Length: 287
Image (cartoon, rainbow, N blue to C red):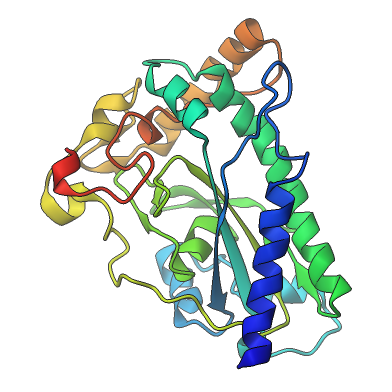
């Protein structure tokens, strides 16, 4: 067990150290970091949830074994030999405060975190893979595999073959809200990353059994603040209208970001800010 715990320690240290480095920046006029300190969690490649995702998300959703096999086709491995490493990158207070004031379009900090911040997240995925390989283990970031894609879904309109939010849910890092965002101990104003590796780390405890456990609408029938925050009515008590949401992102916010901030990008995040779950797991007292 000591060896397994050591795996967790150096992996988490690698993620935290990289987040404290110079790549974590909004760039441009904002000489500040894009993301706050990360949360890190682990799930087993043999976790039954990953097989359940083939029913919940779609039959096309990869298990950790399938994702690993695409990257390392010559390596014989069993599901229990794999660990999925997940992390949460939380928006800074400055970014959240700016976006909280907006009612239609994203604040510049938010748009930068969506583009430059995700560029950092890509680098972080590659860095984690590199560090794990340096320790002598095979690893891959499913989202960066050439086979990764989105797929049409009868139930969800469109979904991806590897969902990092679902991996984070399996790792005990959060549950889903009415707007489909992941509500974590650092709130819903976050982005997510993941890597699959052929090493064993004790899974992080999941303090929930319900995939909506942290959303007040589902647990208490209250809140609905994300409905009020959506500028195009893409959120209702029935859930998240992905097509309406996507059409607002592109081309509407895309044109706004280019015209007002001077770079190619897009974003919104209004349903992730100005809501009780913006930066924490909410309670009824927060409504």
